[in-house]
Length: 114
Image (cartoon, rainbow, N blue to C red; front, side, top):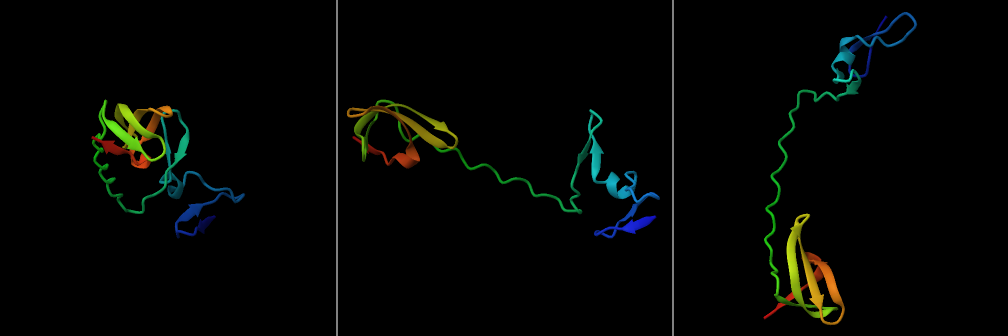
C-alpha cells in the first residue's frame, strides 16, 4: 500500500499499515553515524545557508595598571589590572573607601582621573 504524505512524497506501507523504513523518503532524512545509530537530519530543501557573520572586533583595553579612576559610588581608586573577558573589559580596582572591586568597564561608569 502506498500513501502520499503532506509533502507529496509517497511512502511505502506494509500490509499491517506500518511505515516502510527503507523507503526513499526516510533514507534522505536519516543518516547513520559510526556507532550504528540513526540521527535525524532535516532536509535543506535545496537552500544553502549563508556563512556566519564575522565576529566583532575585540575591544581595546582602556584602563591600565596604576591608573587613577573615579566611580560614582565607590569614589577614587587605583587600577590594579585590566583584561578583556567575554568581549568586554574587566577592571580590578582598589578603592580607598571599600577596598578591592572587580568591575565590568562598560557598566561601571569609571572616570579616568589625571
